Image (cartoon, rainbow, N blue to C red):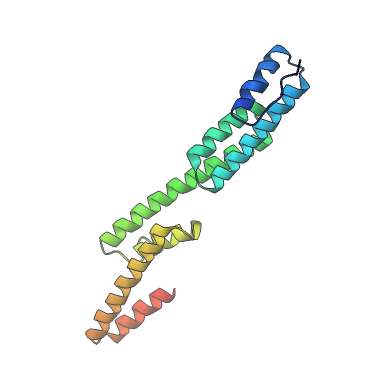
Length: 165
């Protein structure tokens, strides 16, 4: 009779857990659980990179139950917590930037340009922040054009210098 082996998840947990419950010293079952747990941990890391925080949490919890914790599980858990917090902070900044833009506050540390800039510093590929910066640029170009139309060269220079940084 063939001893219970361990296959890939999701059946691996069932296949490996049953022999483990009967024979706690069954090396093959324990090795199988370890292998599946590490695979789940890899899935959690991959989901984290994709910013699929729900998928990462699910895979991480499965890995934790199979591996019984450990430094690698804790490291992924810490990275996930940090990523979720970072994402929440970016959402707050985006909402503040949108509000500033809607209310015409473009300049200054609480202006749309600075707030969208903070988002892009943390997430350079953030499409919402990039679009927001395009809108800021359009508004500043309109402001400069209006200043030039009103023969306010000093104001236009000041607006241009604020763009430079």
